[in-house]
Image 1 (spheres, rainbow over the protein chains, first blue to last red):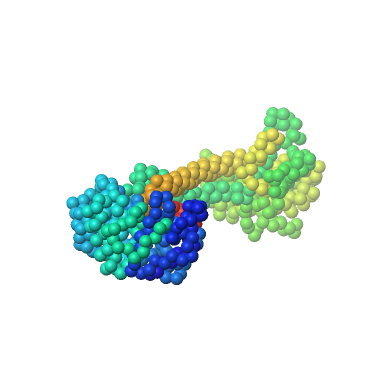
Image 2: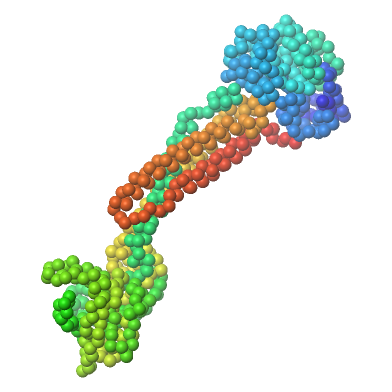
Length: 209
Length: 398
């Protein structure tokens, strides 16, 4: 899938706030299949907004977003099979266990078996927390759950909104490795937002927001 | 997983409260409605006399009136006034015979000899509750048909015959007895054959065809004495409250028993309506209550529902749990109330059948209950979907 942004501008931001952006107000910004993009900006510059625009969960923008050349208002349907999203605020269910949170998403597509999910949980070093309620996890642990939940569905694009904000260097390395493997396996694209440069991963393009 | 997640959002006490109130309200509605349908034929049977919507009016007789008899007659002005009342549909005067009448028989095997003075009245045929081919009179015929009140026969059979050791008579036997009527006046006299051709429940008098009476009053009677002491009124609506007020005010006498019964029916219907109304309020409140609870539940769990939508559950899938849950609760409550209502109905039918000659009406409980289930479930499902959609889908979705 190819995602193209045309003249995107959040309705709630002034022209001055987005004057130096590589994305906002640009005639055409392309996100191509199989490529990795980093979107870099300080806080409050609309990184999350941009991912939400692409994901279809926020429509407060001017301009158009085309998916494979079509301005699609049924973006919602992409959530199951085409676009996966690691939310900055995780959007986990605190009263479900780690496994249940992942399985809740997986039941929509049945993309992974229970064993595959368990392997993921083991890989991110949460095996001992498999049956713990998410509300009892640390932020870093929650972040890892959110990431593997996003990896358990078929996708052509994965959106990661500051995915490592609560992780230490070791964990970042580990998780990056798992993400890249899954992205390559599914021949998908990756769009990650971050406050700074990320040197754990090689990006095809870095865009300043 | 979704079930486990959404189950936690429910407040059990609210669901139980809803289930109980909707059960109570619907049971009362079903029972009162069915009871009303069941009892209706019984009421209309009892008010059959009132189907004709008519009553005989006379003036109350007081000590003074026994002295001054003129006061028992209606003046033309009074009749005009009665005619002009809003409750009056039509009015018919009773004509009285103004000549002397005797009835007597010859001795037969079954009937003892009798001789009695009589009086006759007549009224327009349209008000009669007796249908017979024999109800006609022509000057050429020497036969006068007579209608007597049914209670005269009862009075004779159960009072007079019983105490005097006389035989009891059926309507049929009486109708076959021929006797003689002698009318006299104006120095003339004539003997007619006569028979009782019918029994009236409505008119409490001895009636002859009005053609005969007007002819005989001219022939034998004193026309100047022809005054009206009783009138038959046909009402537009016998349960009209102004009727009794008017008659009390003018000191007219009416067969109050009939009006009392219609008052009783009125109170019964009012009571039924009141109970029905209360039950309706209970149902409306319980429906509003559950809709409000659902709304609150959705608002309180807005984040959870939004998260579900964000990870790819569409609004239909999210709403499904609440739809199924509320529908099931409603169905179980209403089916329970259907069973209880039927049980109550069977119980009261058993009692009524013991007391009255009564055939049960059609059972509407099931039909009514199923319709209610359908209406409620459709309403709930539409509203739940609408509310969830409002919460999860971004407002200005293009």
